Image 1: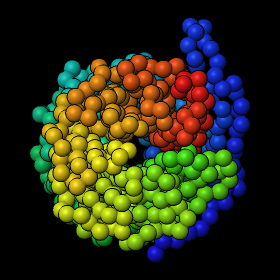
Image 2: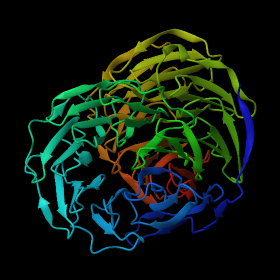
Image 3: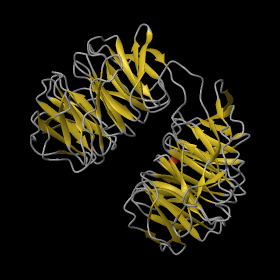
Image 4: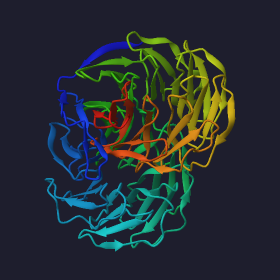
Length: 629
């Protein structure tokens, strides 16, 4: 049953910056500025908001540290007494590690540097030489004398504590390194990368044998057993693999997780814990056998997991800010801290631009009033996160697709309409759209199938294979007689409203499609992709313009102005941009969000542009009236 209640936001910051709507820069072009900004913030609480790494103190098993992705804050916690201390690292800190003797902390960041810090949070010496690209993983050798990190373009870096290179392996991965780990004696380093391989290295940087192959997608996490004889790896293919230290397979793939494995850790006795975006923590033996049932006592994805030094306790951090403590065998012990704003996996505006919706990791949907976001209507029903949310043309209803395998139709006022549909597919749903007359719904799953349903949840026909990978975007024409789907296989397909393919798929994009939208007249289709490239297509699937590199990173959302002469793009780089139909940039890039921009929408009169931050909770209102004429 759907549950409704109102979430009172006790500490809400609303900044009315009231700047000039437009100003003219020195080159004579219009530079848009925002009219106002609304920052939605939950009541301050003692806890992280998005914990991205947890580590126990190496010499005191009663102390652990949590790195928060929001604010780059490291907080130090006592099992008995709660928060002990916190301090802020450099903006864009991705990872950290304690030295074995707990006399310093090492971090890696978006600025391409490795940094050392004293235990009180003050910098220790100068940053290590900057590299091109972010540092996403670091590890300290057991002796505390060498630091391993990812380098540029698939390379491994081994550093002395003074910032000089201890070794620079000549061989490289064919993709960026995502994880590194030292053996207990410090003689071996393991690395895992986006080329789907694990590599083993001697301490001097020479390779130990050939790359270890078996994973089918990126490797995100690695760990070496306390005895030094087993390497564990996991990542985006949802499987765990165990390798002997000589590089031969030991066990795997260990299956059970239904989504990415984001973290893993060995206990002192060799039990392996893995944490996944499917919301579970699983325990495994060194032979790859499950230990007990999956641990799932909290809604939302698990981002991090760690064992205490003596193995009697496991901590797990969730993307909604909760950190839970359990005994070493997985039994709940206590919930010691909780953070604030949940991670906004979905952010969408209603057609009128007066309401926007967000959804957190636990599947709850929040409806906010743009002009007065002092409270949110909270609608519950999904058991896992919502992947996409789409308002109908009237703005009175919306449809959602969730990783719980269901799509649902909702009324803004009255809640769920009918029963969930598409659950019979047994798939994770990735994309959803509703026809302009609200009579037809299209959902796409993670295997590339397209499914049609009427407004009451009655499935129309059989699922049709439209793509070779997940369907990542769906959009209807304004007339509703056609719809388009985009896939993670880098293709676009047009369909009739009856679900029949129209023409051949568009290929050659070379990057997964992230978003699609049609112009108000229905004669132009705009697509964005993970490589930041914007494309415009005629209805015969031929390209209208040369490829435009719109953003540094994913294009998150596209929206046409009501007149159809402008297209707005929102990027993972935190920037909003405007384009004409010739593919030329209009005005200056609109900056102001602290991170990825997840949604963008024009007001019905085309004079205002709304943008919503995926992580920062900000909704910005831009006056673009002089640009849309």
